[in-house]
Image (cartoon, rainbow, N blue to C red; front, side):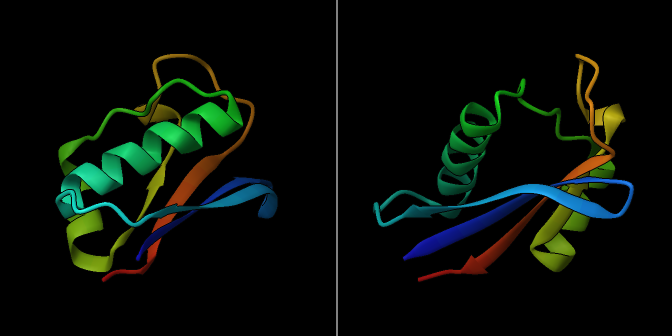
Length: 88
């Protein structure tokens, strides 16, 4: 089972969070992108852009923060954090 936890923060307080599970036989990358699509749908957000620094941080820690630099539209929170919490 693959699980990804997403959280929205503003002023160091968590506004929303959700966990997306994926039991498919897809690759890890596909699972991450599918989970991010689901998260953006649940939070009613546009998809964030993966910058080189974002990719590097996610590869190192299985956790990354998307700030206003990662979104084309304006956002009403400080950042969105995603973290892999379980992998099969």
